[in-house]
Length: 82
Image (cartoon, rainbow, N blue to C red; front, top):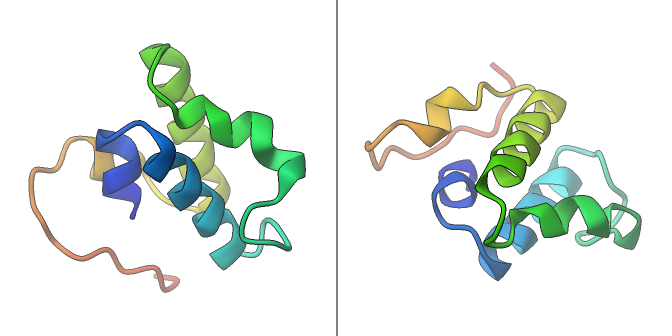
């Protein structure tokens, strides 16, 4: 999911990051409207802001952004705690 968010800005990325925040217990709903301004940073436009938001999201869920931004590998992500 994080690879898709990192590589494909748009509505899918917005909903995937919202869902990840829910899965990791950051939000109480699958699309928490309180976080909507943050989620909308994943739409196309300002790539530097989108990358900054991605780094922030990865930090929040305990993942390294570079592992998802730079890998061309189609490997499955493991969402369990390491």
